[in-house]
Image 1: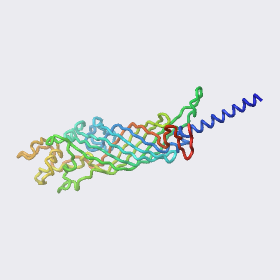
Image 2 (image 1 turned 90 degrees about the vertical axis):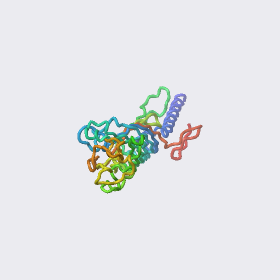
Image 3 (image 1 turned 135 degrees about the vertical axis):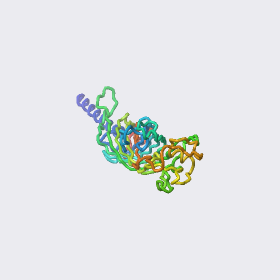
Image 4 (image 1 turned 30 degrees about the vertical axis):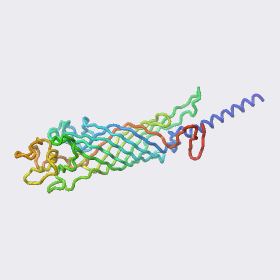
Length: 335
């Protein structure tokens, strides 16, 4: 009888451990491939570096459109990101992401003689909102030990993902340059530096927003059971060639063949910043080095990219606070 009682007690204890482990794992091990639905909703945030691929700066030799080989490292700037992710399948999710940052592009750092002589420097704030689809190409998401009992050994939680993504969105930009006439950074779009809207110019003035397509790859790893750390590299292709205010040719407002009045004196100064701005309006005239119709840039669309470090938090469940039960698909569990 005593032996049977011991066996029965062991069976009851075993059933209790199994049941308690199952209950515990239901809410805490959201990072498993089997229980991917327990990690459907995330918020994330982070920040990092920004680089611009346009008409300004670059390396020595002929410019390489959209190539990382033409990166001007001295122009690296910053950005921050915020987002929401919804995982609707073991390998698929969608995210809404907002990035705000600054782009800096300058000819002063390039070893290319022609671009260095051009001497154009701009900066602009970028604000882009994108909706992207994400596909997990590699995942190692496994359940670790369910109970933190002393002496209990078991596999640790594993939560690693490698994913790729693309999507569509909008980006706002407002290129500025430093005006020696004004002694401050001024917006370039109203100045019509390439003669936008004037005879022989570049047609209508450009808008300060455009459509963009992000392409990227990322890596996520667990930091406990509710937080993850991520690294993302995002490349953005846009449909504008004016994020740096440079597109095709110079428009010289002082040229006798043009005979137009610019919007402001800064239009002459910043269209060709190689001359002395104090000569604008004098008898000598502006002494810039480039004439009307000479090459100022190319008509390839601009691009930029981010390298970001961030953190995400699972918000699929309500937090367990002050003894309130955690809710999971109608199941109430108290701890």
